[in-house]
Image 1 (cartoon, rainbow, N blue to C red):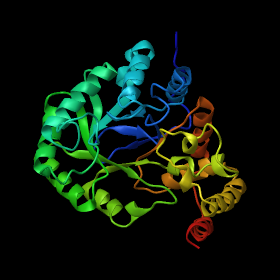
Image 2: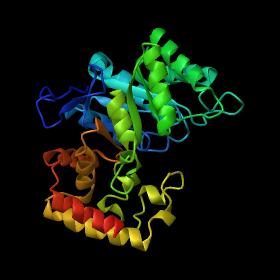
Image 3: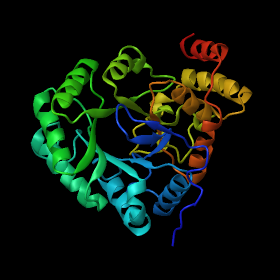
Image 4: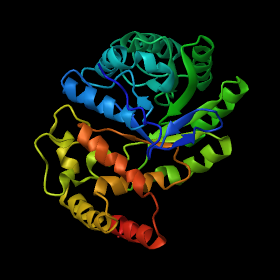
Length: 330
């Protein structure tokens, strides 16, 4: 029988308010995109959830299509939640999404009202929950009027299936319109989830300004660039890495000699900071005031423990920032 750490809220995990809402998220949150599927180590997934909760991580991020096969991450999380965490439901923020391909036929993809509501109903069954805390429209669908998508999100909240709504992977102009429409419906968007890391900085161009003006929080995914920004690929591609996984999103072709060289130089900067490369990469994302929380996707509890140590130092001097930029951009 799992007994949570009684001091889980007295450690280094701090919390930020998410946009203009009363909901607080931990600075590091656990993403379940990888390593919670049917072909992954279930016992290790259990250990990761135990450690996360024991360390004060209260935010667990899912989507309808996470895991292999699609939906298995929600199913496995649901099994573990109902076995160990159901009495702690009110201490957890559980999120899911819909928008990408999930099932065959005309209704298993996109951002239509039919797909979003049907998908959430299926997610709730897999999770064994009555509601999720945040439900996201996972992507902008140019074939569906944004008014339809927004009304579906509003109705999902009114139906009690989600407490809050968010959007993910939307172009800036579409995000602005969604924010305005949701405010008009009195169901404000509290969070935008997007890719952000040392190697991918597009949100800095205009998205962050839009989020600040609209008072919307930002949750960063791919903070480690699918593991590229870690020690894992400094000397090649390990056998059990994401790049070696045929079902993985990261491809072997992305681990080029140029990338490896840059990672080795960044690793030297991290060592001077007394951090691992992964810790420095997470700290770099969290240094930005626009970032509410950064998602970490890990394959072992030991990796999660190491990632949490990134919170020990999220300060970067101007000199360090310039050196990092020079390594990446030349």
